Length: 249
Image (cartoon, rainbow, N blue to C red; front, side, top):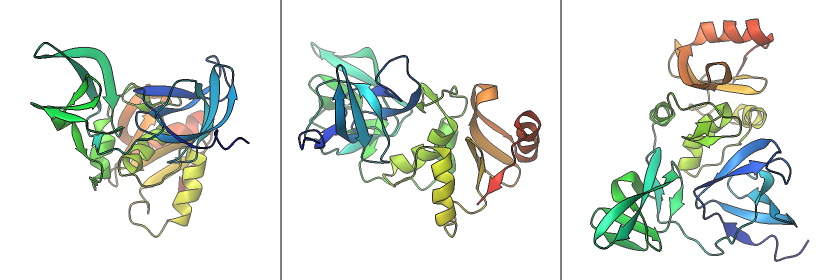
């Protein structure tokens, strides 16, 4: 493998699908956000196979010109932070956003905005310092309440069950696997930690987080969105529809 391929790159689009194979018709298995570090494993015409630095996830994305050097100073703390541009002395809205957890490098500050690329600005209040640590997992999960369910999604444009759990850890830059089967294995290894113990329920191909002894929150395909549901009723419904039994940490 060429040494040029495996060097670090940084993603510089708002969001991009990660596909199972080098085709837009292939299954979307995850997504990559602005500022994410990755390595290029191989090239296939207009596609590249990548491995993300955060969770070692592999898949194919479309080929662009990526950043080679990038050291984020801040990160997005709002579900969707609109990107603005300056025309004259006015900040004008664009149709584009950066999404929760995305890392940015602040080039300039003007009024209430940070510039993160040439004439691309976000509101300062939409960001936190890159080393900001959010302790409240439930607060983050509830940010995504009613966001639509999307297989492979990991943003407020659509999110799946395992990404909903992972996004808290990603924001805090703490490793946590992307897929629910790997999350189960990881949580069992870390079962002594309070954040995992008795709080996460797994089924084959699904995961939910218990908010308390009565309710859980999950990105639930049948409801087509992130919802809060009664724990006992959810277990019963999933068992009735799929015959799957829950697995506790």
